[in-house]
Length: 161
Image 1: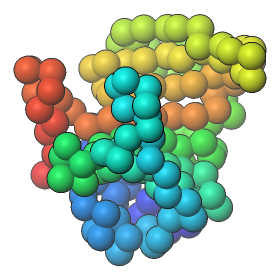
Image 2: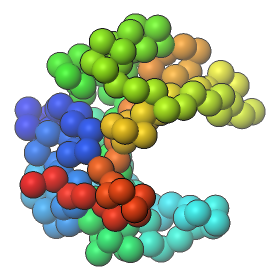
Image 3: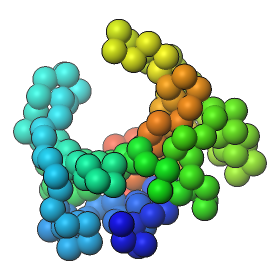
């Protein structure tokens, strides 16, 4: 993995990969993805307006949105290689993650049990202020997702400088 793709920066991106980048710009940094798929939209039907790129070897995914001119709008990581404030969160115990978030003054806006038949012990912790979501399975962090900052209108995305 390139050292310039390591640090999770809420509102900004994943190291050199920044929110608002085009697909071509991302390819120059991360290379071609191992898999590309269209994702469900808000109506839960598969849409051709959301495209998810998966990088299997490094366990991260990038989502591009046609509504934003196919720019990068979401990043998810599930490998302890990636760090947040220098800490590898994936694999950490839930209480340790919660303590770290509190220490960094990150306000939790929601905690939700998102369990289903396939994932019976799945929980989501969110910080709307940070655009940060952390999934826990059996009280262990398994994935971190970040989103770009949003204007006060709640819809306009703010691309990092």
